[in-house]
Image 1 (cartoon, helix red, strand yellow):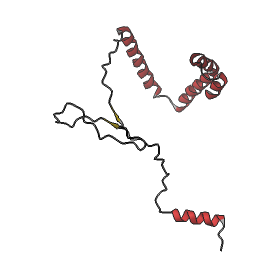
Image 2: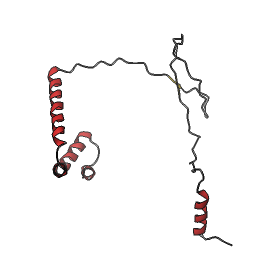
Image 3: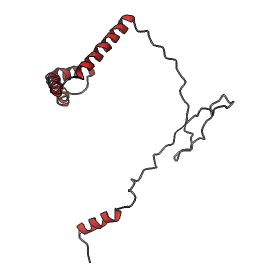
Image 4: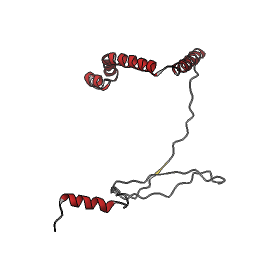
Length: 148
């Protein structure tokens, strides 16, 4: 007796109920193992880092140990007091605005959101032109559509 396609599909689905999920096959041909140097264990008297066992690649017998980059001391330019004061004032104003905004009703929030959306819609063409001029990438029309 021959089974129809619906019967075959039904029996195939029923046979998978309760079984382990099917895992996709992975390609091990291009898999690489990368090992890094490890720090010495706590209390160790050695000053040299302890290197992990060299990994032998499937395709070549070369070691895959990667040395950690040396730590570079970062030096930042000091921020002028005037700029720091402006930043603190801006943060103070934004916190105040956030407190006030949190008391708005949903209708007020919707009105503000609609005004922002209309303003962004009106500015999409000039913004697209500016983006293309600045980055020298893309097409103005595509950026207008993207920002719509």
